[in-house]
Image (cartoon, rainbow, N blue to C red):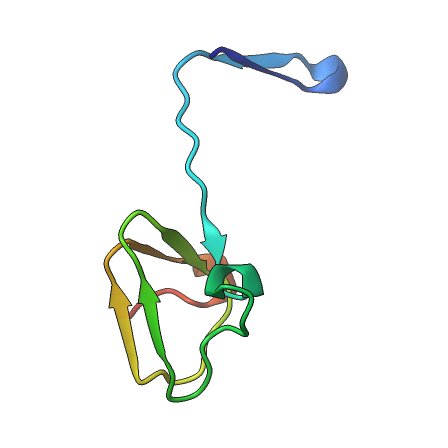
Length: 81
């Protein structure tokens, strides 16, 4: 499906080979089934087929199991060291 992005009077960009990838935000309740994000000492699980962007610095967790993708946001100081 071709996509065209218009930039007002500055022109346009056109692409024919794009891939859309949905990413959940760590900070959103919807990522955790309507519950608060994992808190101090909690465990977190990211199942296969899911991608979560770590958009906040979480408290110290008991465990994090990643079967899907955990993406670190360098701009928000959540880069892995």
